Length: 353
Image 1 (cartoon, rainbow, N blue to C red):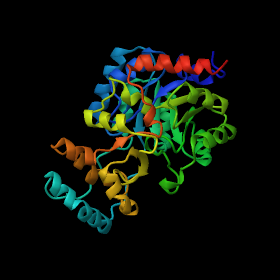
Image 2 (cartoon, rainbow, N blue to C red):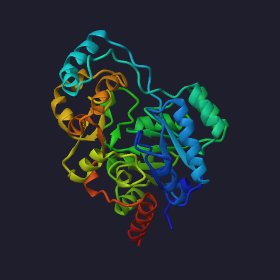
Image 3 (cartoon, helix red, strand yellow):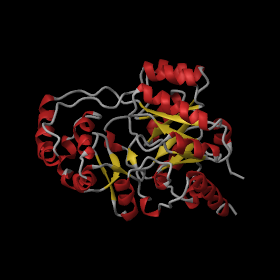
Image 4 (spheres, one colour):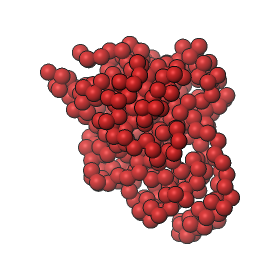
């Protein structure tokens, strides 16, 4: 049925579709529904404490006996800059007063990188697929995961990154085009360099590596899947299209923003977390546009900016909430995750004839 089946065999799935992990959005219910439909469901564990990783992975494994993917951040420990931190605290002070948060605290590190605690959980519970964003953890950790039988995936936003991942032992590479929602996975040099679009990036990575390539970014229906295969990909990773599924952890004001979004609604900003991420523009994105270069290193910026999205007043919360979404946001279809997988497969099939 599919032009290439190497990824299907590697992952043990029926359909070459991976639901993107999407930290804070993916749930055990979403991941299990996707996996039970024959694709690969994913848990975004990048922002979760260890106990929550265990809880969500265990709940997902109880809901499906099919392969699932757990995703983690592998970012370097950020360097603290007191002068830059004071500038950002001063810049956000007015917003904190407006939403009643009190003084702006010193920046911290709210998102854990992949560490021994998380490694122990993964080795104990044994999900079939482990994926990383912002590069890979230490090579010794990679070797332990490989020896345990884990299939490893990682995002690349350039050809050179893809080559590095293949050399490090990654089993399949996610070619993340600039259209993708959420954080850019760039891990070499300036995080702003990975701006190649999916259509240009995928065939270049396919030609540069021997492992299966997974296209990601701007894929929201069967046409995108068929196009990805035509470019040489062995599968796709889709995130934004799953935001409209009832199993996704998307609060009402987030869903409202998605429903009103158009093809012109998204842009990439560093002001939420310190790393470039594609979001639906809101007041915070627009007003902070001049502070892109002043954003603190990831995830220090997140410790200062994200508390604003917890404002008690819903209209204020909408001003400051990061609405992670890709350039296909205007084409969202509201339906259960399993039905979406079925529809994507059927649509892709119609373009293979």
